[in-house]
Image (cartoon, rainbow, N blue to C red):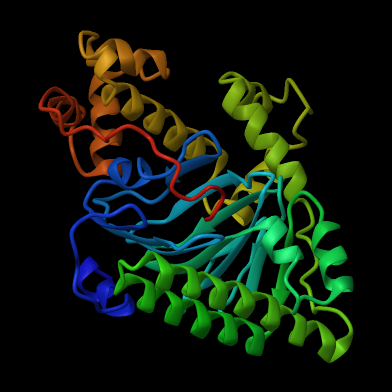
Amino acid sequence: MNLETANLWFPKYARQEPNDFVIDVSQSDFEMQTSLFDQSNVVHRQLTPGIFQGRVLCAMVGRVSIFMEFSSQAIEKQFSTPQDLFSFCLVLNDTKQFVTNGKLKSKDMLCVTPPGGETTIVAPPDAITLAFAVDRDALLASLVLEPQLADWLMGLGRNGVLIRSVNLVQTLRDRMFAALEIALGTRDPERRAVIDDIALTGIASALTLEWLKINGLSTVDRARGFQRFERARTMLINDSGLMDRVRAGLTRELGSQRSLEKAFSDFAFLGPMAYLRVVRLHNARHKLLDPERADESIGDIAAEESFWDWSRFTSYYRKQFGELPSQTRQRAFEGKAPPARRSLTSGVV
């Protein structure tokens, strides 16, 4: 799916001059799109190779912020939710292999991440998501939120939960999309406050109605082995020689090589070596785009990420990002590098 086709999913509205509550940016550069997000609590990686196209549309109406995002490539996101927010995420289009905390996620599932929680998603190519962040205290104080449901939400574990419900997802999708459409067409602060009230009440009432149906919510069991995968991923990223020791049978810290290969295939859709190469390529790209490192040679930066063969590094880099390392560096010199990071999501995938 190209960006032109993806735009058909987004609200149609007359774009106005930039303002303080609406952000609508289309990008042909993965780093430019991710630069919109506060990197203190979000890590993005482009998993599939090729030229990137994407769009982020956000309306921050008050206690509720609503987001739509499209990415043409498969993207991994690891994010933590601030202590004062709940984060919710829906998938809008039919996609395969959309994974949230190790579980395949379909269009009839709602991802909920509590305040201070952490979530890892792997979105396949061409995924379109609708997400919303809600002020914790405002949601819990809502008059239409069932008290037992409020307690349940605050009792969610670190990785949150996937709720399976066609009706709940459809209701929230319709309400949030409508609120987003209306918000995009107004600059009146008083009207935005009304939209904020309606969106907040809509979220609380939809959750409460679903809760009252069965005196609870239908949730998806946690993925077996996902925590072990997360631990292995962290250890491999922090110790570049660990995979070599695993392959040589010199350590059992991560289990057998076969079990490690299966874990990465199940949860990241890449083998561990391919995944680590993606991580190293992203690290090199960040350094190439850093104006403070403009005087350093590309070869030295590549070597920092254990790419010792220049031609191989160039080949990997061009395949992954659709441009040569020198072209990335040139954009940095020309002032076309990603702008300063800003807090756009505050914990929304």
